[in-house]
Amino acid sequence: MKVFYRPRTFCVIGLAIVAAMTCLGCGSKTPQAQPTTATEAPLRVTAAKPERKTIHRSFTQPGQIDAFDIARLHAKVPAYVEKYRVEIGDSVRGPRYAENGTVEERGQVLAELSAPELEQELQQKKALVAQASAEVEQSQAAIKVAELDVVSAEAQLSEAEAGLDRADAEHQRWNSEYGRVVQLVSKSAVTQKVADETKSQLMAAAAAQKEAKAKIESARSGIGASQAQLEKSRADEVAVRARRQVAEAEEARVHALTDYLRIEAPFDGTVTERNADIGNFAQSGGGAGVAPLFVVMRTDRVRVFVDLPETEVALVRPGNRATVRVPSLAGREFEGTVTRTAWALDPSARTLHTEVDVPNPTGELRPGMYAEVSIELAASKNPCILPLTALVTQQNQPWCFVLEAGKAVRKAVTVGVRSKSEAEIASGLNGDELVITKAAGLSDGQPVELEPAPAP
Image 1 (tube, rainbow, N blue to C red):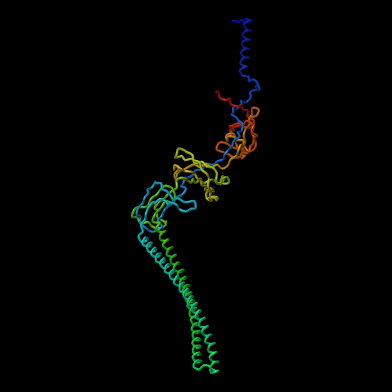
Image 2 (image 1 turned 60 degrees about the vertical axis):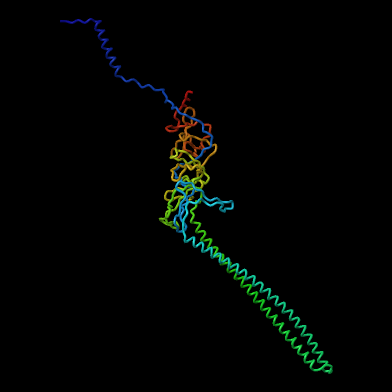
């Protein structure tokens, strides 16, 4: 059977097949890539100009609060505790001094000790002083007697010299009379008997003259003896005065020891320890194993000890301001001052032992408390200041990013004083730049735009 196709129908079928094949070809062919014109989206940032203000460099380190003064009071002499007058926690009053340094008022009595043998020794020393004083008075009286003996001997010498003058005059008179009588006897004017009597008177006058001379020598010897006795009496007085000084020194020594039977507060403070019980025997001195009778701590000022690392040592000076934060007091802060350093570093830890004095008028700071000490090491006035978040460091070189023409431009800077959150820019900026405040993750030339200000 023959099949006949209509020419029009055939044409339609052919066109359909060609169209179908064309569609299949379109689905399998890959088109050419078109060049893109899209740019990277800019990163939104915050930026600000560097501030001009004073910046302080500080260093924070843990520390410990200690008493400004600590007195561990021991007995000076062996004695028994007779009574004690204070307990732990009691406030005590120390001595008061005059402007010249003398004690106007003694410290408060903390305890009284008893040592009867010491009291007896003091009485003995007082008696020795009284005895020496009596000997001094006796020697002074002997000096007066010796001085009177010298005066008496000098008077006797004067009397003897006057007698010699009389004897000389009498001898001269009889010598002249005897010569005259001898002439008269030769002329038979008088008898020989008269001449003999005159000669006897002359001889008597000569004897009286010798006697007067002997009295002068005796008086002079008496003066020498009296003067020697006076010198001896004066030497005796010096000796007994020295003995009295020795006795007085011994009395003062023992009296000072008896003063140690009163345990007194050395300064204003608080009793933190008491080991004095009535009847206990208190050993003298503070040897090993001997507990102090009392421990007194000064409370109106405290010391805070802190050890600074070697990197900060060059900037620490007495007078630096310090802030002491005490966590146990709800983080309260107290102002203090660096007063002293050990100067030499601890070789084992390479740290510098530093002391900070803090006023403590209310007694809130107590020895043994933990504290965080922040010491101001350096300060720079009116420099360019950036937050630390605006800085990055690469190979020990600090950088910041400046906003210029919509891009983050990296700038090398020199950093000076640092604080906890800010840093001084010593060089690299003139202060008029817009510096991106958060530099982490930025790269040089990265497109950026300012973060819009929050709506009011």
